[in-house]
Length: 311
Length: 228
Image (tube, rainbow over all chains, first blue to last red; front, side, top):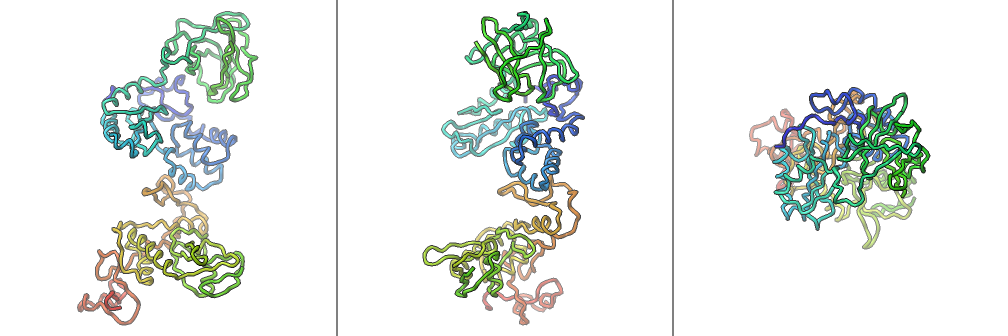
């Protein structure tokens, strides 16, 4: 059994756990805070304005919450004027939809024919043994969900295990423990030495040329980019990972998804603006000077991953 | 629409289905998931008929197939009968306790079930789902899950706000009416009772008049295969 972790950001209400102040005082894992029910009508309306097909919306909700909360299905059925039994029927028909909250990491073990003959059953039972749950369940600390699938279409690489969308091939039962440890440390932990595309950048303000790096504060083990942001009536600091390709950040305030941020230099208080339109959402991007020449542009809309490096 | 059903030429209105035309002409096609007041569904496949001529014939569900110009339909060929019997066999093995199914079996002369009985209480004919939506305007129950986990129940398996407890689903359900237990309740096929006035099961129910007087809920007359 893995060591029980301290309560981490699991609350999925605004998917903004790292800056949520409530979570700091939580004594046990929570799925939703009090704002949950207030947020659902807004979320569903927001999604409906982009899409008007049931499955597409269910997919969006699933992406947002990692599962389909009962309240969202009711809200969707009411707004789309589809009987709830049909929404529920669709949600239960497809295996990619889950009505039960899933853990932070989803482990899918392939039990298809090709994987099965190479001992996938042993891998699956080893996972069950290590995590102390049955397939289809979630660990009590809401870290892992285990499921078995019947084929992932990569039979030549079997036995296949997919963890958080990452494929692991030729998995053996003795590798399971190591895999779990790797995942709990975080697959998102970027190995800079291995990945050529990921490198740290050092940036400065395009107006006053003052460096924006904060050396004493590390994100992804590198000094972070420290800027100030304002949105609505809030104003505060915002720290970005300086690794190009990493989207980790910290913020003083909780920033709802899809909010467009106004970003300022903390030294000269100029608004950092005037880049290209974001390739993903067409918002005007924020420009910063890269030490060594060139500019880096990032999209100021929370949740958008649009960025350009111009050297 | 001029078509020929079992050799009878007939001019049917355009909106009719093969089943409606056949029923209008008095030809009998057994149905299970079909109901006049509900939309045709084609789920039970019992109403299959053979269409086409020569070698290029095919089996279609008559309840959903609209009439076509020049269509040639056979409602009771050998192929149709054997396919229908097989379908009924599968349905009965799913739910041997249904009176409607047992009656159909008796009518169609089905005398064996080669599949292991499951003793389920639903055959997924969808009648309850449709009556709830189309006649009761409630849409309280529906299909959930899929494959061997398919179920009909209310969303989230909770008491539904839409359900008015009208009982329409139970009224129309073919599996809710249990069969006569007959001489052997363990048997997949029931005692093959027909409502003739000549009891033939007296040798089994010796001196037990409860049976054929209907006092125990049994239908009264068992016709075994040998007696036919």
